[in-house]
Length: 308
Image 1 (cartoon, rainbow, N blue to C red):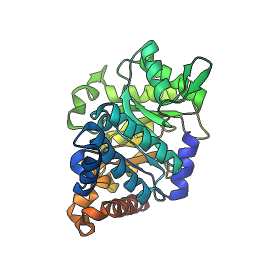
Image 2 (image 1 turned 90 degrees about the vertical axis):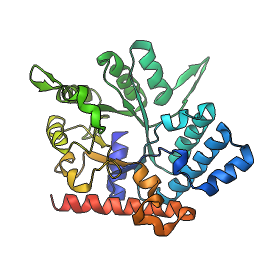
Image 3 (image 1 turned 180 degrees about the horizontal axis):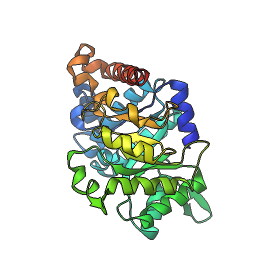
């Protein structure tokens, strides 16, 4: 799967993933009004609004981007109906030829971790038949439980030609409470990064591993260190835009081949119409604002890499 991701990044000249993390507050009133008129102010109504919002953004940006990253919690908050919207979003993105990174941040031990991996990347056996439950191409994984929590995902990746991105240094302000703590003089995030590189050797694509890492845009100096520690690891970089990251901060996440990183922007793209820079589009043309935000993000990254 990593080969396909790299191919799409090169084809579209866009190391960008759009985070489909919809909150109701991001969704224009006219979409919510239509959904509530049909389904009421219910979980089903909210989930339908989410789906219609996602669909419009996907239609407007699919030709520009290689991948999307739906955050499952934004759907789970609406219960079963929300998970239906999540599934419809995953399926529609794949119909559009997009690679889907399920942002699920799961990690447990033994059979539980295997069940998570099977649900999102593999196939569930029912009698004599097998079914892909959610069917993402990659998922994010929390390594806090160690190899017991990660290796079941690795095995499913091998079996089904899928991939994972393991949390190494996250973009949130309090990440350092644990991730920056030193073990025998070495920050924990560096130890995790070395382990990710080790696991990655078991699951190589042509040049990069199917086992990637999550390293936040908000910590560029740490990203620079981790890039050197994990030369064959693709890095998923959250924190661009709304969280403060910009193209100039991200050049060291890339290898000399111009590859090795894919940058995520969520509300900076899907709620772009709410930003002053894109207010001219208005809420009715929110998807056009999202498209322009992708174009601007691509130019920002290209300019930064060109000046590297």
